[in-house]
Length: 104
Image 1 (cartoon, rainbow, N blue to C red):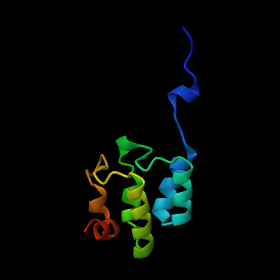
Image 2 (cartoon, one colour):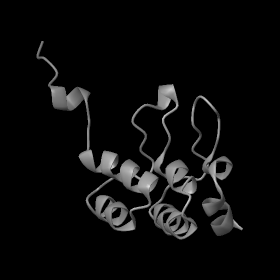
Image 3 (cartoon, rainbow, N blue to C red):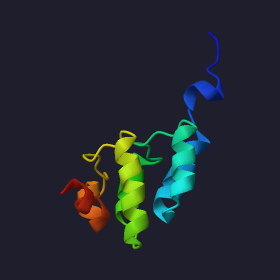
C-alpha cells in the first residue's frame, strides 16, 4: 500500500492564520487580503481546545469602528454567526458588542 503524503493528511492554509490574527487585531486590510487569498472565514485551528473563530475575535475588538468593520467583512464573506467555541459554547454574539450592533 502507498503512503499518505503530509499534504494529504494535513491541510494548512497560512491565510487562515493571517485571518485569525487580522480579526483579532482589527486589521481590516489584512483581513480582506487574506479572504481574497482564500482564507476560510469559518476557520479555527484547534476546535477541540476552544480556539476562537475569526468572527469571535472581531467581536471582541475594543476599538468599535475596527470591530464593526472586520465583523461586517467576515459576515459578508460567509462567517457563520452560529459557530460555537467548544469549551465555552459561546457564539460570536456572546463575545462582544461589535457584532450585536450589526445584527440588530
